Length: 141
Length: 434
Image 1 (cartoon, rainbow over the protein chains, first blue to last red):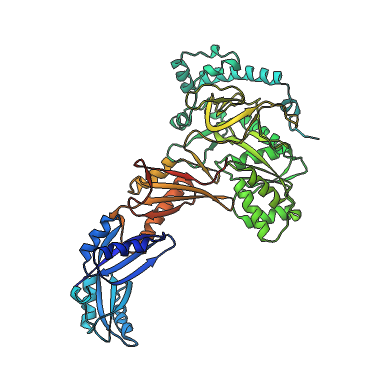
Image 2 (cartoon, rainbow over the protein chains, first blue to last red):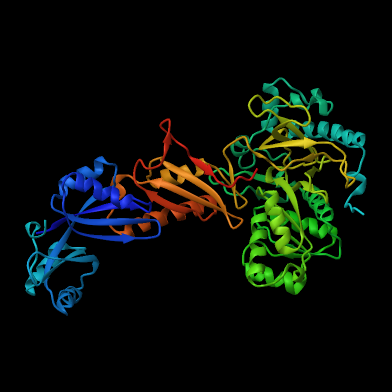
């Protein structure tokens, strides 16, 4: 039940981010979650949108460097220690988290966390076995 | 009262200089023709025999020699003496694959060191001076040349080589160095470091500096002079011709006297190869007339400059060349290292990048910077910072091993490098050195 994430390469130049959001708004694509990883030279904008494939081709048409990555999403109880439990499960299973970011869901009292790990299937299985709900594309898009 | 290392040569009459040049040119052409297959072939192709060269007036009959010829002749193609008579090899900075290597007999080294000694004395050096040589040693000619010249003058010589600025400063202070030899950008950096340490120019024992191997402006000269409390002198040379000391500045600081008893200088039109009248701006061409192991006949330096024979207040009679005002090829000199854009392209190709790149050269705090912007292909883009940083690091390492220089690499999106008339402008030099 992997979720499709778009990664966009962003040079460190004024206005570059708004160019990306303009492309998406022009195609009526809704951003559900995002995070930026940055260095002094460049950034990588990671996006969860409601129409990943349409968004990808729209951005590519405008000359952006885009790649699609499979990530997993988990639902976490919105309370202290909620995220810690999920991460402890992965740590005990010896799985590294490459990066992650969170957003609040429509459903009350639940936070969604997007995780990038080396082996999506294995991580999904171990989390599910420990009672952590795994999200499907429909849940987030 | 000006001082000379070899007054009878440096202040010789024009007639005397011309007589030396005529005689030595004839000998050198005979020597090169007899011992180097390359010169024989080139002259035969043009239908020129050594006997056709009777004086400097006949020099224009000889074919030119280019850096490409030198690369093609690598390694021993242009060696003009039996290998057992040569005692030294030096090499040009910053090239790979086919480098240019130059050979020296013991006499060649002696004469080269004489040239450097003239430069040191012209900068006020005497046997009571302490000379700190902070040019690189090794294959690069800067260190060995000035080191030898300093010995000839009888100076106490500190063979520091470049780098380790804290130690450079400590030695200048503790040992009382009075003359500093290095690249102008390194001199500026040493000056800044003194300033940051709160040491005023009056407290620095240095009185003069001999700086070369890269272009520098009058503003940079004044800046170095102020920070170090010295007079800064320019020196010019090419490994192909021996190294530093082909020409050097005197107290007048209005051009560099070419050591005409060893080198004949011409100015040509870089497009037609035609010799231009005196005072014209054009490409500098040198013929060595005393070197035995590695004679250079009409070597095209690609440096654009002007020659003047107007009498100099220092009393030297040898022709003066202006600071190089540019290049007739695309070579860049970055922190004293020769860099051709084609080398940068080679590194990119080797790592699978398309040839869409831009080279930006600048000078920040008196030190050259080299930034390379490279377009990625979509397929190269992973989604982690680690991935892209690793790609950048690979290129940084690739440039380091190709050029021996630290290059700032910037990966950019496809089609983002500006193109004019469909073609990318490859090099942007922001230094404004001329």
